Amino acid sequence: MNQQNQVVWITGASSGLGRGMALEFASQGATVAVSARRMDELNSVVQEIESKGGKAKAYFCDVLDPKTIETCVDQILSDFGKLDVAVANAGFGVMGSIEQLTEADWQRQFAGNVTGLALTCKYALPHLKKTKGRLALIGSVAAFVPNPGIGAYGASKAAVHNIGESLQVELKGSGVSCTTIHPGFVDSNITRIDNEGHFHPHRQDPRPANLMWPTDKASKVMVAAIQKRKKVFVFTGHGKVVVFIGKYFPNLMRKVADKIAPK
Image (tube, rainbow, N blue to C red):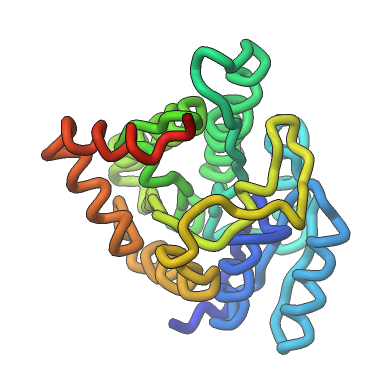
């Protein structure tokens, strides 16, 4: 798809799926505004895009700090004059059983994955309405199934799904589409970020490698879903199966979750 003259903002774009989507949008001709906390990594993304003839600019944004979200949008509008696509991708997982998790763990998980995402929408939407643009929320198949050991993360992604459903109604007639994307296992850095938000680049990913989609493949289908203005998009193949079982065979899904849960 040709996205010349499109201005795309992606949060959490310093690595993983955010970085992958930035590269994919840029390869299709879009100007990409990438934001995150780690400016060194963001600048590397910008350099990679520019080395391939694309256009990109890095902006600091910490979704745990609402003021930086608002400031980031203001800077993007000052630099490019408009916003066509906003992807609320920034997020992380707080690990631990519900019995173990502290109040601070819950607050941090929801501040990032829910409040930060909702405020990303809030500050982007007035500008997306001017361009009849596209909004995308990055959820997870964890929104639909039991999540032993990562209950806070699953609850936050269930909230993301409901935010997307609510926006489908609120945005009716505005010309703005909202696509909620729920990936299955995709190669990303989510398991390398600890409960305090520290990044551990060499931490081993515990998820099954044989079910993992590569980031570039995932990024292509995610960008395509946003461009097609799909309402809800679930992938990978195993992700679709898990969501189906969780919906129609919940007892079976609980048994499966019990077998794979950390003991």
